[in-house]
Length: 307
Image (cartoon, rainbow, N blue to C red; front, side, top):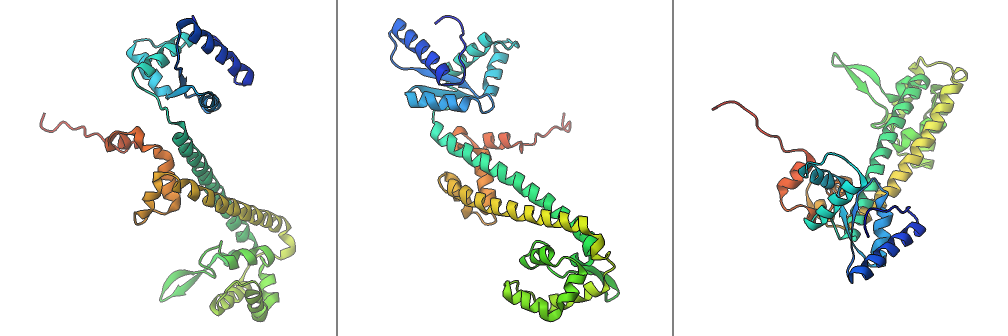
């Protein structure tokens, strides 16, 4: 074939590509087919997959590689012909990955770990909103300044606002008046019934803070109470989604060599999965220095001393 041609990203377009390949094979009596495909966002992935199924040898070329080849050719323009020539040169120089199965495993892991990180950020923002609404509804619920040995010290009811006991009370008994209505006996009964494991000290502090609270009457906090309930529902949903993701991510991690990172003290599943996903296939690196450079943690010394 002479000159570039176009085809769309569908089965119809793929048939056009196959016809062009077959015509070229017959014209030049060729047997093997090597396709060079440049990475363009995620659009190239399906084409790589169907070409692999067809039995073609596919070499995936990083867009940065073709850009570097154009620079070496002193050609700073970007047209279809120039790009095609750069891809051909990349293949001839041995660039490009041919093992897509392994790359796909890392891509899945990367997609899920990045999604998990976004969910964790959403979860953090959700907790911040919960804190804000509780400041209006029951300010002392998150802790109160107490004078101890001449120093101010924040005394909390619960260690974490997202603990099981804290979430349950915020959802069902968020206002000081709710706590006082329950009393010590009611709170103890709730703790036993719902396995909240509230200590007597926490119950006493909760009642004390409720009695001393200067929060607005509950009937004036309709908007805040509604928004608090919605944020608590959102928190529970995000938390469940993260737990589900963690199970899938752990399974994918253990299918890669990244599982060995779990043997390092201080590295748990989440960090091991993120490191593995972002590093990708270590076979792509021939030295530790290349990996360090990719991570951007290779500071260069620049000094004038001695010169």
